[in-house]
Length: 220
Ligand code: DX5
Ligand code: ZN
Image (tube, rainbow, N blue to C red; front, side):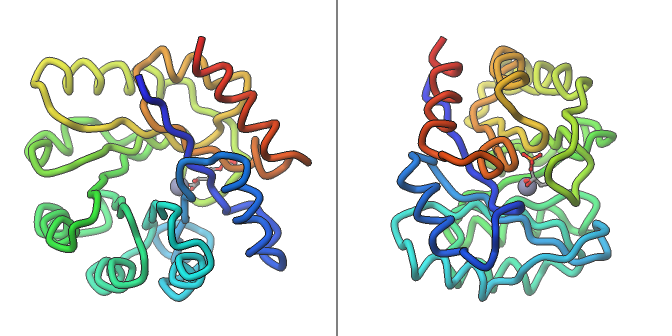
């Protein structure tokens, strides 16, 4: 299994953004995870597509995983697609027309993801499983980095993994929130493919060493 690490920059020092991105890429992250927040869907405010564009221009080769936690997503999908997003992940309760939004993401030739909050059931995406490339299981309530992993997420990952395997869907399972050196093994064992990690990397002094520690655990 080719596990992937996607480093979230939510908790980096934004005054040093270019250096932070370089250190994560040099440290071996597979992608950079961008948390787009609007202070309405979640109680926090972050960045728009200009920010994505700046990172894409700084480091054109790294995949940028855009996780949108905002309302009024139609214009956001188009603008992130035009500004370097490799994947775009949206939440079902942000939109009246989830299928249409997913179709639009795919039309831009971008990896399409759907995120499930801790209380959102898997059956909310039952009828779009043929359309999507990845499911992002939120293992914290969205909005902030540095929160504690919600353990009921493990059952949800297992259930989703079984469903995907049974129905032979080509869908990756990503997990986002509270992943650290203590929690990653149980998340891997539950069936995750992609690990979105913020504080447990960016709160350390040496991103390369930390990412290597995660990889060692994933290789066991
Ligand atoms: C939370 C975000 C996460 C966050 C994860 O809403 O979606 O991507 O950055 O941060 P940690 O790993 O610190 O929980
Ligand atoms: Zn995220």
